[in-house]
Image (cartoon, rainbow, N blue to C red):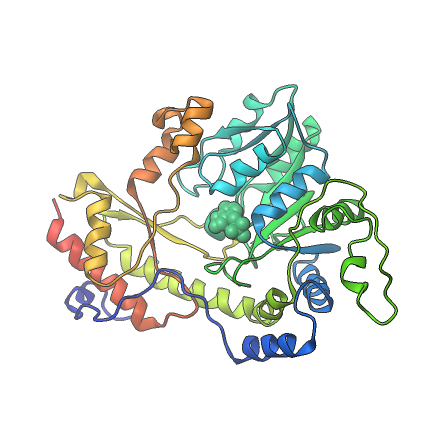
Length: 399
Ligand SMILES: Cc1ncc(COP(=O)(O)O)c(C=O)c1O
């Protein structure tokens, strides 16, 4: 790592650095072509292989491939019997899917604030929000850093609640030496285009409970009794007969997605190593800058670094977060703001009457956060460019 202060004099980038581009290689292209040539492109043998390999990777007994993490959350809630009149505790500092899925089944999301250091659910607030209607807790592993799962599970056990993990950011993350994917009733992963591994769109639910997974499979294929029938009916010994046993959905994964997922899974640990390396470069380079706060990494996790957030300290700068992002853009650095807390969106304000200050930590983080580019597609020079740009902006606007 070069002298970090000197990086401010590094010439600005001439090409735009995207926030989180996927890294697709020859293996994915070959697997895709194989699927395209195979005569069967939607859910079939490749999806089943991917499900088995993903389950084995995280150490879960079962997995089911789905169209998205949003679908996984929705079906996990149904499969656990959560519905009309129930309450589900989650964090306001999450993406639309977590809050929406709870409402898809007719339940009410009960938002909690997040922890100031990890941005994960404020575990010490859970107890006080449990009512007679509470049925489940959905922790969200922000940016790939696992939540305090022992504490969450202990509360759930004592109060007879389910735990469903929103692990959209946490493919490959570990908690106390165990992979995320085995720590709760159902874990829901995302393979969206920006995630640690991708299938374009895609998701996976993992669980050790065969009945829950079977129910999710049935629900993901229109509610047809044996979800395999739908694609095996065209096989030489397949049967045209099928029975719809409940009102299901069309949420299955396609073999075209699994064709990307199989090689991406093989590369996941390597991808996450690169992410870790870039996160360390950022941490080192920002350590002497009091104008920004860097993410805190807790000792019990192996972080997947899906996101690398910084918080700017507005009291030390003459510009605010939005202007900082604009300056990064003019330096050709792509960024994001993850997230605008759910309770601040107009739908959630109108529906539940939330005000921005209801969750002070989430508001504090939202007003200061900038997510910097991080992706295995980047190289050290890209990271040095981001560091140079940040140091220059701070030099220009230090109070
Ligand atoms: C925390 C969280 N949960 C769920 C999702 C939804 O994932 P998907 O796009 O696969 O439905 C996202 C997507 O970014 C997310 O960040």
